[in-house]
Length: 310
Image (cartoon, rainbow, N blue to C red; front, top):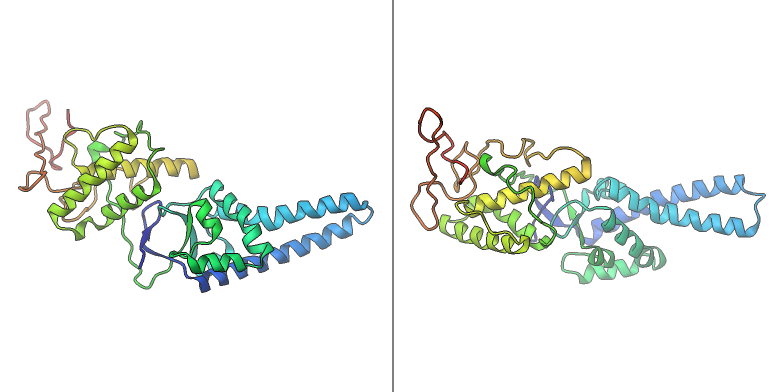
């Protein structure tokens, strides 16, 4: 069973949609679109009865493109992958990495859908979905998207842990354009499942993913930053950028808290300190000793046990 996470990393456990549910959602969408198309066509026919044949033909083509092609693209873009049929069936279109789709994804899906759905009555789309391991049609392959189920029987809701407070905002200038979707998905799946891993295995996986991520961004992992904390901070930065692009608002953490807010993490970090990665000061491979924090009064480390590295 293939499990995915959404781009905002809030819901865990999304499964690729099966052909019957996708076909039902598509049928609902087609019925709605054709009803709107026929209603508008009848209205325009009555209003433009005095027009010549060339003008009427041009208007008919424009109606076809706007209603049968443009409307589904606009709906998927504005709803982030939830059309009326998909909403009724509990489905959603997401990127390959589980993130929300944008206009270019919906445009490619809609343009290719004219051929594989409208012109072939869905035969090509059905064959492609049956052949694909994840049930993707041709439009999904070219757009880099996937239709998933949002409603699952488990109902589990998990969140990617926020980064330590001293890492909040540290990677605002990082170039993330070269990071592939597959790597983002691997990082998010590690962060949401790190509590299930052995400490040594989890540290090794985090170090490998951090090395791959640093190689894609062109900037090394800062010295003294645990790999798990680095991964959480970079994912949080990407979420903030996606939120600003999509909604024009400031970035917030995956659980509704501002990025860097305190919160439980799990066995690889002390609860209450928002530390991602192995516990500070513990014995074992790759453990990091936190430097003491001294204020003007010369007192010891803060309650979190972390201080920004020099």
